Amino acid sequence: MDIHLNVQNFGPIEKAEIDLRPLTVFVGESNTGKTYLAALIYALYQNLGGISQFPWAGFVASYFSPARRFLHDYSQRQQEEIEQEILEVLEKLNTPEHPFKFSDLPQRIHTQLEARLTDQEDFTNELERCFDLETVSKLIRFTGSRDNEMNVSLSIRDRDQTCWNFEARVAGSADPVITVHINSDMILLDAKRKTEFRKVSDVERLFRTLRTHRWRARNSYYLPAARSGVMQSRDVLATALIKRATRIGLDRLEVSTFSGMIGDFLEQIFQYKERKRSSSRISRVAAQLEAELLDGRIEVKRSTPEAYPEFLYRPEQAEETLRMSHSSAMVSELAPLVLFLRGVVGQGDLLIIEEPESHLHPGAQTKIAQTLARLVRAGVRVLITTHSNFLLQQIGNLIREGELRKRGESTNESADCLKKEEVGAWQFHKNKPVAKLPFDLVEGIEPEDHLDIAEDLYNESAGLQNRIEQTKASDAVESE
Image 1 (tube, rainbow, N blue to C red):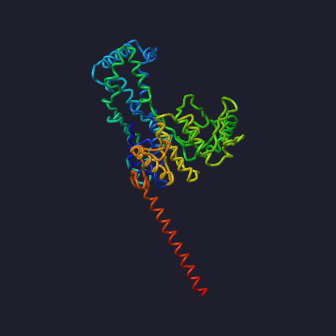
Image 2 (tube, one colour):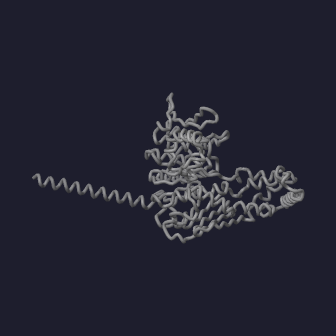
Protein backbone atom coordinates (compact mmCIF):
# COMPACT_ATOMS: atom_id res chain seq x y z
CA MET A 1 0.00 0.00 0.00
CA ASP A 2 1.45 3.35 -1.07
CA ILE A 3 0.37 6.42 0.93
CA HIS A 4 0.99 9.85 -0.56
CA LEU A 5 0.33 13.05 1.42
CA ASN A 6 0.23 16.55 -0.05
CA VAL A 7 -0.02 19.51 2.36
CA GLN A 8 -0.11 23.25 1.76
CA ASN A 9 -0.18 26.11 4.29
CA PHE A 10 -0.46 23.81 7.29
CA GLY A 11 0.88 25.16 10.60
CA PRO A 12 4.50 26.22 9.96
CA ILE A 13 4.62 24.21 6.71
CA GLU A 14 4.38 26.05 3.40
CA LYS A 15 4.29 22.92 1.25
CA ALA A 16 5.07 19.24 1.69
CA GLU A 17 4.69 16.19 -0.54
CA ILE A 18 5.43 13.02 1.39
CA ASP A 19 5.41 9.35 0.45
CA LEU A 20 4.99 7.27 3.58
CA ARG A 21 7.53 4.47 3.29
CA PRO A 22 8.02 1.46 5.56
CA LEU A 23 10.50 3.79 7.32
CA THR A 24 9.86 7.53 6.98
CA VAL A 25 12.32 9.99 8.53
CA PHE A 26 11.66 13.67 9.27
CA VAL A 27 14.78 15.77 9.92
CA GLY A 28 15.44 19.49 10.19
CA GLU A 29 15.66 22.42 12.56
CA SER A 30 13.26 22.81 15.47
CA ASN A 31 9.98 24.65 14.86
CA THR A 32 9.91 23.75 11.17
CA GLY A 33 6.86 21.47 11.26
CA LYS A 34 8.14 17.91 11.77
CA THR A 35 5.84 17.24 14.69
CA TYR A 36 2.96 19.08 13.00
CA LEU A 37 3.12 16.83 9.95
CA ALA A 38 3.54 13.68 12.06
CA ALA A 39 0.52 14.72 14.14
CA LEU A 40 -1.52 15.37 10.98
CA ILE A 41 -0.75 11.88 9.69
CA TYR A 42 -1.81 10.46 13.05
CA ALA A 43 -5.05 12.51 12.96
CA LEU A 44 -5.87 11.26 9.46
CA TYR A 45 -5.45 7.66 10.57
CA GLN A 46 -7.69 8.28 13.58
CA ASN A 47 -10.34 10.15 11.60
CA LEU A 48 -10.54 7.47 8.91
CA GLY A 49 -10.64 4.60 11.38
CA GLY A 50 -7.27 3.42 10.14
CA ILE A 51 -6.06 3.33 6.54
CA SER A 52 -6.31 0.44 4.09
CA GLN A 53 -6.49 -0.04 0.33
CA PHE A 54 -10.25 -0.39 0.64
CA PRO A 55 -11.66 2.23 3.07
CA TRP A 56 -14.10 1.00 5.72
CA ALA A 57 -13.82 -2.58 4.49
CA GLY A 58 -15.16 -3.74 7.85
CA PHE A 59 -18.34 -1.72 7.35
CA VAL A 60 -18.88 -3.24 3.91
CA ALA A 61 -18.15 -6.71 5.31
CA SER A 62 -20.93 -6.30 7.88
CA TYR A 63 -23.41 -4.87 5.37
CA PHE A 64 -24.58 -8.28 4.15
CA SER A 65 -24.32 -10.12 7.47
CA PRO A 66 -27.47 -11.95 8.60
CA ALA A 67 -27.60 -9.88 11.79
CA ARG A 68 -27.85 -6.72 9.70
CA ARG A 69 -30.29 -8.05 7.11
CA PHE A 70 -32.88 -9.17 9.60
CA LEU A 71 -32.76 -6.35 12.12
CA HIS A 72 -36.20 -5.27 13.26
CA ASP A 73 -35.24 -1.72 12.29
CA TYR A 74 -35.64 -2.71 8.64
CA SER A 75 -39.04 -2.77 7.05
CA GLN A 76 -40.14 -5.73 4.98
CA ARG A 77 -39.53 -3.72 1.84
CA GLN A 78 -35.98 -2.78 2.91
CA GLN A 79 -35.18 -6.40 3.70
CA GLU A 80 -36.42 -7.42 0.26
CA GLU A 81 -34.26 -4.73 -1.34
CA ILE A 82 -31.17 -6.01 0.47
CA GLU A 83 -31.96 -9.57 -0.58
CA GLN A 84 -32.22 -8.38 -4.18
CA GLU A 85 -28.86 -6.62 -3.83
CA ILE A 86 -27.30 -9.90 -2.67
CA LEU A 87 -28.63 -11.72 -5.72
CA GLU A 88 -27.26 -8.99 -8.00
CA VAL A 89 -23.83 -9.22 -6.33
CA LEU A 90 -23.90 -13.01 -6.74
CA GLU A 91 -24.70 -12.62 -10.42
CA LYS A 92 -21.72 -10.31 -10.90
CA LEU A 93 -19.51 -12.73 -9.01
CA ASN A 94 -20.49 -15.45 -11.46
CA THR A 95 -19.75 -13.41 -14.57
CA PRO A 96 -16.81 -15.26 -16.14
CA GLU A 97 -13.47 -13.65 -16.89
CA HIS A 98 -14.27 -10.34 -15.24
CA PRO A 99 -12.81 -9.21 -11.88
CA PHE A 100 -15.14 -8.05 -9.12
CA LYS A 101 -14.72 -4.27 -8.79
CA PHE A 102 -15.82 -1.60 -6.37
CA SER A 103 -18.43 -0.52 -8.93
CA ASP A 104 -20.05 -3.96 -8.57
CA LEU A 105 -21.09 -3.18 -5.00
CA PRO A 106 -24.62 -1.85 -4.42
CA GLN A 107 -25.06 1.90 -4.85
CA ARG A 108 -26.28 2.07 -1.25
CA ILE A 109 -22.80 1.08 -0.10
CA HIS A 110 -21.20 3.72 -2.34
CA THR A 111 -23.40 6.41 -0.82
CA GLN A 112 -22.82 5.37 2.79
CA LEU A 113 -19.06 5.05 2.34
CA GLU A 114 -18.82 8.49 0.80
CA ALA A 115 -20.89 9.95 3.65
CA ARG A 116 -18.57 8.40 6.23
CA LEU A 117 -15.39 9.57 4.53
CA THR A 118 -16.63 13.12 3.94
CA ASP A 119 -17.96 13.65 7.46
CA GLN A 120 -16.88 17.25 8.01
CA GLU A 121 -17.58 17.28 11.73
CA ASP A 122 -15.52 14.16 12.44
CA PHE A 123 -12.49 15.51 10.58
CA THR A 124 -12.76 18.90 12.28
CA ASN A 125 -13.12 17.36 15.73
CA GLU A 126 -10.14 15.07 15.23
CA LEU A 127 -7.83 17.89 14.13
CA GLU A 128 -8.94 20.08 17.03
CA ARG A 129 -8.44 17.16 19.44
CA CYS A 130 -5.00 16.15 18.17
CA PHE A 131 -3.66 19.71 18.10
CA ASP A 132 -5.56 20.86 21.21
CA LEU A 133 -7.11 23.84 19.38
CA GLU A 134 -10.46 25.59 19.57
CA THR A 135 -10.75 25.90 15.80
CA VAL A 136 -9.13 24.29 12.76
CA SER A 137 -8.57 27.71 11.19
CA LYS A 138 -5.67 28.24 13.62
CA LEU A 139 -3.78 25.57 11.70
CA ILE A 140 -3.69 27.69 8.54
CA ARG A 141 -0.05 28.55 8.05
CA PHE A 142 0.71 30.81 10.98
CA THR A 143 4.11 31.97 9.77
CA GLY A 144 2.65 33.77 6.76
CA SER A 145 -0.61 35.32 5.63
CA ARG A 146 -3.68 34.06 7.51
CA ASP A 147 -5.66 34.49 4.30
CA ASN A 148 -4.04 31.41 2.75
CA GLU A 149 -6.11 28.32 2.11
CA MET A 150 -5.01 25.18 3.90
CA ASN A 151 -5.07 21.99 1.85
CA VAL A 152 -4.61 18.39 2.98
CA SER A 153 -4.68 15.67 0.34
CA LEU A 154 -4.27 11.93 0.91
CA SER A 155 -3.92 9.37 -1.88
CA ILE A 156 -3.84 5.58 -1.47
CA ARG A 157 -2.44 3.31 -4.18
CA ASP A 158 -2.08 -0.45 -4.39
CA ARG A 159 0.48 -1.64 -6.93
CA ASP A 160 -0.61 -0.13 -10.25
CA GLN A 161 -4.06 1.19 -9.28
CA THR A 162 -5.24 4.24 -7.37
CA CYS A 163 -7.61 3.05 -4.65
CA TRP A 164 -9.02 6.26 -3.23
CA ASN A 165 -8.31 9.94 -2.55
CA PHE A 166 -9.24 12.21 0.35
CA GLU A 167 -8.93 16.00 0.22
CA ALA A 168 -9.80 18.69 2.77
CA ARG A 169 -9.62 22.44 2.18
CA VAL A 170 -9.98 25.11 4.86
CA ALA A 171 -10.20 28.82 4.06
CA GLY A 172 -10.34 31.35 6.90
CA SER A 173 -12.84 30.42 9.60
CA ALA A 174 -15.06 28.43 7.23
CA ASP A 175 -15.70 24.73 7.83
CA PRO A 176 -13.51 22.27 5.92
CA VAL A 177 -14.66 21.29 2.45
CA ILE A 178 -14.01 17.57 2.04
CA THR A 179 -14.04 15.63 -1.20
CA VAL A 180 -13.48 11.90 -1.60
CA HIS A 181 -13.04 9.79 -4.71
CA ILE A 182 -13.08 5.99 -4.56
CA ASN A 183 -11.85 4.35 -7.74
CA SER A 184 -14.83 2.51 -9.24
CA ASP A 185 -12.40 0.23 -11.10
CA MET A 186 -10.61 -0.81 -7.90
CA ILE A 187 -10.35 -4.60 -8.07
CA LEU A 188 -11.58 -6.39 -4.94
CA LEU A 189 -11.34 -9.91 -6.37
CA ASP A 190 -9.61 -10.99 -9.53
CA ALA A 191 -11.39 -13.24 -12.04
CA LYS A 192 -9.67 -16.38 -10.72
CA ARG A 193 -10.82 -15.89 -7.14
CA LYS A 194 -14.40 -15.12 -8.17
CA THR A 195 -14.97 -18.78 -8.93
CA GLU A 196 -14.87 -19.49 -5.18
CA PHE A 197 -18.25 -17.82 -4.64
CA ARG A 198 -21.25 -19.63 -6.14
CA LYS A 199 -24.08 -19.53 -3.57
CA VAL A 200 -26.02 -16.77 -1.85
CA SER A 201 -24.34 -17.65 1.45
CA ASP A 202 -20.98 -17.17 -0.28
CA VAL A 203 -21.69 -13.45 -0.61
CA GLU A 204 -21.35 -13.19 3.16
CA ARG A 205 -18.02 -15.05 2.91
CA LEU A 206 -16.94 -12.68 0.16
CA PHE A 207 -17.23 -9.72 2.47
CA ARG A 208 -15.62 -11.60 5.33
CA THR A 209 -12.54 -11.79 3.11
CA LEU A 210 -12.46 -8.00 3.30
CA ARG A 211 -11.58 -8.38 6.98
CA THR A 212 -8.44 -10.34 6.12
CA HIS A 213 -4.92 -8.97 6.50
CA ARG A 214 -4.77 -7.35 3.07
CA TRP A 215 -7.89 -5.26 3.60
CA ARG A 216 -7.55 -4.68 7.36
CA ALA A 217 -7.51 -1.02 8.33
CA ARG A 218 -4.05 -0.17 9.64
CA ASN A 219 -4.03 1.73 12.93
CA SER A 220 -1.58 4.39 14.08
CA TYR A 221 0.17 4.84 17.42
CA TYR A 222 2.13 7.85 18.65
CA LEU A 223 5.05 7.86 21.08
CA PRO A 224 5.48 11.56 21.96
CA ALA A 225 8.73 13.24 22.90
CA ALA A 226 7.41 13.57 26.47
CA ARG A 227 7.13 9.78 26.96
CA SER A 228 10.07 9.57 29.38
CA GLY A 229 8.55 12.18 31.69
CA VAL A 230 5.16 10.47 31.51
CA MET A 231 6.65 7.12 32.48
CA GLN A 232 8.66 8.60 35.36
CA SER A 233 5.62 10.44 36.76
CA ARG A 234 2.98 7.81 35.95
CA ASP A 235 2.57 6.65 39.55
CA VAL A 236 2.11 10.22 40.76
CA LEU A 237 -0.38 10.96 37.98
CA ALA A 238 -2.37 7.80 38.72
CA THR A 239 -2.56 8.55 42.44
CA ALA A 240 -3.52 12.19 41.89
CA LEU A 241 -6.18 11.22 39.35
CA ILE A 242 -7.80 8.72 41.70
CA LYS A 243 -7.78 11.10 44.68
CA ARG A 244 -9.11 14.08 42.75
CA ALA A 245 -11.76 11.98 41.03
CA THR A 246 -13.13 10.57 44.28
CA ARG A 247 -12.75 13.61 46.53
CA ILE A 248 -13.95 16.39 44.23
CA GLY A 249 -15.38 14.82 41.12
CA LEU A 250 -13.97 15.23 37.65
CA ASP A 251 -16.83 17.46 36.53
CA ARG A 252 -15.72 20.15 38.99
CA LEU A 253 -12.05 20.14 38.05
CA GLU A 254 -10.57 23.02 36.12
CA VAL A 255 -7.58 21.57 34.34
CA SER A 256 -5.52 22.17 31.23
CA THR A 257 -5.97 19.77 28.34
CA PHE A 258 -3.52 17.51 26.52
CA SER A 259 -3.14 17.23 22.80
CA GLY A 260 -4.84 14.18 21.35
CA MET A 261 -1.58 12.28 20.87
CA ILE A 262 -0.52 12.79 24.50
CA GLY A 263 -4.03 11.89 25.67
CA ASP A 264 -4.10 8.70 23.60
CA PHE A 265 -0.61 7.77 24.81
CA LEU A 266 -1.67 8.26 28.43
CA GLU A 267 -4.80 6.18 27.90
CA GLN A 268 -2.80 3.34 26.35
CA ILE A 269 -0.34 3.43 29.25
CA PHE A 270 -2.96 3.65 32.01
CA GLN A 271 -5.14 0.95 30.45
CA TYR A 272 -2.28 -1.17 29.17
CA LYS A 273 -3.05 -4.78 28.34
CA GLU A 274 -0.90 -7.07 26.29
CA ARG A 275 -2.51 -8.81 23.35
CA LYS A 276 -3.17 -12.49 23.81
CA ARG A 277 -2.19 -13.12 20.18
CA SER A 278 0.45 -10.51 19.46
CA SER A 279 2.78 -10.93 16.51
CA SER A 280 5.73 -13.10 17.48
CA ARG A 281 7.99 -11.16 15.09
CA ILE A 282 7.12 -7.82 16.70
CA SER A 283 7.37 -9.26 20.22
CA ARG A 284 10.82 -10.57 19.31
CA VAL A 285 11.92 -7.04 18.43
CA ALA A 286 10.79 -5.92 21.90
CA ALA A 287 12.78 -8.73 23.53
CA GLN A 288 15.89 -7.83 21.49
CA LEU A 289 15.51 -4.20 22.56
CA GLU A 290 15.42 -5.23 26.22
CA ALA A 291 18.42 -7.55 25.88
CA GLU A 292 20.68 -5.31 23.79
CA LEU A 293 19.92 -1.85 25.16
CA LEU A 294 18.14 -2.10 28.50
CA ASP A 295 20.12 -5.05 29.90
CA GLY A 296 16.95 -6.03 31.70
CA ARG A 297 13.21 -6.45 31.33
CA ILE A 298 10.17 -4.17 31.62
CA GLU A 299 7.59 -5.82 33.87
CA VAL A 300 3.91 -5.03 34.32
CA LYS A 301 2.36 -5.37 37.76
CA ARG A 302 -1.22 -4.88 39.00
CA SER A 303 -2.33 -4.95 42.62
CA THR A 304 -5.80 -6.02 41.46
CA PRO A 305 -7.14 -6.91 37.98
CA GLU A 306 -8.96 -3.56 37.84
CA ALA A 307 -6.06 -1.42 39.09
CA TYR A 308 -3.86 0.78 36.91
CA PRO A 309 -0.77 -1.14 35.79
CA GLU A 310 2.57 -0.37 37.41
CA PHE A 311 5.67 -0.58 35.21
CA LEU A 312 8.89 -1.82 36.73
CA TYR A 313 12.41 -2.37 35.47
CA ARG A 314 14.26 -5.52 36.43
CA PRO A 315 17.98 -5.29 35.58
CA GLU A 316 19.53 -8.44 34.21
CA GLN A 317 20.22 -11.03 36.96
CA ALA A 318 18.79 -8.69 39.61
CA GLU A 319 16.41 -9.93 42.31
CA GLU A 320 14.78 -6.55 42.93
CA THR A 321 12.81 -4.41 40.50
CA LEU A 322 13.00 -0.62 40.17
CA ARG A 323 10.18 1.85 39.67
CA MET A 324 10.45 3.97 36.55
CA SER A 325 11.14 7.02 38.70
CA HIS A 326 14.22 5.23 40.08
CA SER A 327 15.43 4.00 36.69
CA SER A 328 17.67 5.79 34.22
CA ALA A 329 16.29 8.19 31.65
CA MET A 330 17.16 5.65 28.94
CA VAL A 331 15.00 2.99 30.59
CA SER A 332 11.97 5.27 30.95
CA GLU A 333 12.55 6.50 27.40
CA LEU A 334 12.53 3.03 25.84
CA ALA A 335 10.00 1.36 28.15
CA PRO A 336 6.96 2.65 26.19
CA LEU A 337 8.47 1.36 22.95
CA VAL A 338 8.97 -2.07 24.50
CA LEU A 339 5.40 -2.09 25.87
CA PHE A 340 3.83 -0.97 22.59
CA LEU A 341 5.72 -3.60 20.61
CA ARG A 342 4.88 -6.29 23.12
CA GLY A 343 1.18 -5.61 23.36
CA VAL A 344 -0.22 -2.83 21.14
CA VAL A 345 1.26 -2.50 17.64
CA GLY A 346 0.27 -5.01 14.97
CA GLN A 347 1.60 -5.85 11.52
CA GLY A 348 0.83 -3.13 9.00
CA ASP A 349 0.19 -0.50 11.68
CA LEU A 350 1.92 2.88 11.71
CA LEU A 351 4.15 3.63 14.71
CA ILE A 352 5.17 7.29 15.04
CA ILE A 353 8.13 7.93 17.34
CA GLU A 354 9.28 11.44 18.17
CA GLU A 355 13.05 11.64 18.63
CA PRO A 356 13.78 7.97 19.38
CA GLU A 357 17.36 9.00 20.21
CA SER A 358 16.37 11.07 23.26
CA HIS A 359 18.44 10.35 26.42
CA LEU A 360 20.52 7.76 24.55
CA HIS A 361 24.30 7.47 24.24
CA PRO A 362 25.52 7.67 20.60
CA GLY A 363 26.18 3.92 20.62
CA ALA A 364 22.63 3.26 21.77
CA GLN A 365 21.31 5.58 19.06
CA THR A 366 22.88 3.36 16.40
CA LYS A 367 21.22 0.31 17.98
CA ILE A 368 17.85 2.09 17.82
CA ALA A 369 18.38 2.32 14.06
CA GLN A 370 18.70 -1.48 14.05
CA THR A 371 15.44 -1.72 16.01
CA LEU A 372 13.72 0.39 13.35
CA ALA A 373 15.03 -1.93 10.63
CA ARG A 374 13.76 -4.96 12.53
CA LEU A 375 10.32 -3.37 12.81
CA VAL A 376 10.24 -2.82 9.06
CA ARG A 377 11.20 -6.48 8.55
CA ALA A 378 8.38 -7.46 10.96
CA GLY A 379 5.82 -5.56 8.87
CA VAL A 380 5.41 -2.38 10.92
CA ARG A 381 5.35 0.99 9.16
CA VAL A 382 7.50 3.47 11.14
CA LEU A 383 7.74 7.27 11.09
CA ILE A 384 10.33 9.10 13.18
CA THR A 385 11.38 12.68 13.78
CA THR A 386 15.04 13.05 14.65
CA HIS A 387 17.98 15.38 15.15
CA SER A 388 20.54 12.58 15.51
CA ASN A 389 23.31 12.28 12.96
CA PHE A 390 24.40 9.00 14.57
CA LEU A 391 20.94 7.54 13.94
CA LEU A 392 20.93 8.77 10.34
CA GLN A 393 24.41 7.40 9.67
CA GLN A 394 23.43 3.97 10.95
CA ILE A 395 20.25 3.99 8.84
CA GLY A 396 22.55 4.73 5.89
CA ASN A 397 24.71 1.73 6.81
CA LEU A 398 21.63 -0.50 7.02
CA ILE A 399 20.62 0.63 3.52
CA ARG A 400 24.12 -0.19 2.27
CA GLU A 401 23.74 -3.60 3.89
CA GLY A 402 20.48 -4.02 2.00
CA GLU A 403 22.17 -3.10 -1.27
CA LEU A 404 24.83 -5.77 -0.63
CA ARG A 405 22.12 -8.36 0.01
CA LYS A 406 20.51 -7.48 -3.32
CA ARG A 407 23.80 -8.44 -4.94
CA GLY A 408 23.99 -11.73 -3.08
CA GLU A 409 26.56 -10.52 -0.56
CA SER A 410 26.35 -9.46 3.07
CA THR A 411 28.52 -8.27 5.94
CA ASN A 412 25.87 -8.79 8.58
CA GLU A 413 24.85 -12.23 9.82
CA SER A 414 21.56 -10.89 11.23
CA ALA A 415 18.57 -9.73 9.18
CA ASP A 416 19.11 -6.08 10.14
CA CYS A 417 19.02 -4.30 6.82
CA LEU A 418 16.90 -1.86 4.84
CA LYS A 419 16.16 -1.64 1.15
CA LYS A 420 16.76 1.76 -0.39
CA GLU A 421 13.15 1.98 -1.60
CA GLU A 422 11.86 1.22 1.92
CA VAL A 423 13.29 4.44 3.38
CA GLY A 424 12.12 7.98 2.71
CA ALA A 425 13.85 10.94 4.37
CA TRP A 426 12.45 14.48 4.28
CA GLN A 427 14.16 17.68 5.38
CA PHE A 428 12.21 20.54 6.93
CA HIS A 429 13.31 24.19 6.62
CA LYS A 430 11.87 27.41 7.98
CA ASN A 431 9.65 29.15 5.42
CA LYS A 432 10.58 26.68 2.68
CA PRO A 433 8.84 23.67 1.18
CA VAL A 434 9.73 20.31 2.71
CA ALA A 435 12.41 18.69 0.52
CA LYS A 436 13.12 15.04 -0.13
CA LEU A 437 16.52 13.99 1.20
CA PRO A 438 17.89 11.30 -1.14
CA PHE A 439 20.15 8.48 -0.07
CA ASP A 440 23.71 8.73 -1.38
CA LEU A 441 25.95 5.67 -1.43
CA VAL A 442 28.89 7.74 -0.14
CA GLU A 443 27.21 10.32 2.10
CA GLY A 444 24.24 8.19 3.19
CA ILE A 445 21.41 10.35 4.58
CA GLU A 446 23.21 13.60 5.35
CA PRO A 447 21.17 16.80 5.84
CA GLU A 448 22.90 19.87 4.40
CA ASP A 449 22.62 21.83 7.63
CA HIS A 450 24.40 19.00 9.51
CA LEU A 451 27.33 19.33 7.10
CA ASP A 452 27.31 23.13 7.47
CA ILE A 453 27.33 22.87 11.25
CA ALA A 454 30.16 20.32 11.21
CA GLU A 455 32.17 22.58 8.88
CA ASP A 456 31.52 25.64 11.05
CA LEU A 457 32.60 23.74 14.17
CA TYR A 458 35.76 22.54 12.43
CA ASN A 459 36.64 26.05 11.22
CA GLU A 460 35.98 27.50 14.67
CA SER A 461 38.11 24.77 16.26
CA ALA A 462 40.94 25.33 13.78
CA GLY A 463 40.79 29.09 14.33
CA LEU A 464 40.95 28.74 18.10
CA GLN A 465 43.86 26.29 17.87
CA ASN A 466 45.75 28.71 15.63
CA ARG A 467 45.18 31.55 18.10
CA ILE A 468 46.42 29.34 20.96
CA GLU A 469 49.57 28.44 18.99
CA GLN A 470 50.12 32.12 18.14
CA THR A 471 49.76 33.02 21.82
CA LYS A 472 52.28 30.33 22.77
CA ALA A 473 54.73 31.64 20.18
CA SER A 474 54.27 35.21 21.39
CA ASP A 475 54.87 34.15 25.01
CA ALA A 476 58.03 32.32 23.97
CA VAL A 477 59.41 35.44 22.21
CA GLU A 478 58.64 37.61 25.24
CA SER A 479 60.36 35.12 27.57
CA GLU A 480 63.53 35.36 25.49
